[in-house]
Image (cartoon, rainbow, N blue to C red; front, side, top):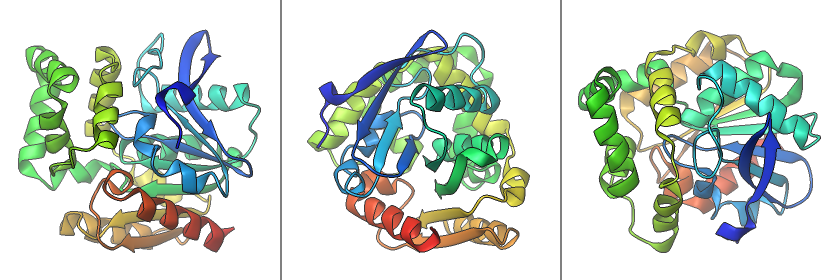
Length: 275
């Protein structure tokens, strides 16, 4: 399994980007959730790298990657991802995003469709997702509207990640070495990136974008997701014949953290099915 010191570093537009790079074969790029980092994929990479060249960057301002010079929006991060791929000399990829990372993957595929041969979305953080849980929505909106709360939450992200992970992911994560490593690495999160990306996925409605994407797409969710979310995802997928939906048993929102083997098996199975 890749360790912390296995991360590589590359400059993208003069800013340092940290990433994992393992295996050989067709390139599979993995985009992490908010407010985590590339380390959430550590336990899935060994199996995935037997089939693909797996590349998992820390997105700008997360993990060990530096922030962008300007704002962190879906558009600017999509442009950053394009530049990152150019630095790695990658022309066409399989692109997978988890939660917030799925929103970036949708935006990137919409803007650069020729560069994505298959789009995979695990529990995409679509606009209506934050509307399904009133407490979670109120938490997000309060954080976004009041600067002093932003700073408090940011300090929690750095110092009390157990509590924040529970709020963000909706359940208590197992306190093992893997999860602890994610939390430790996550202490490098930068405030401006966390703030601007939080605002982006609260208020940006990208449902119509997903409905019009022509790239072959897989959406997979855990069966333990909120029932209303599962119903909405299924209805959305029906609006675009290019989308294949898969519901995964035994897991919830954070498939890659809850059960990395199920995550890897699902990804491999869906890529083999659609390519």
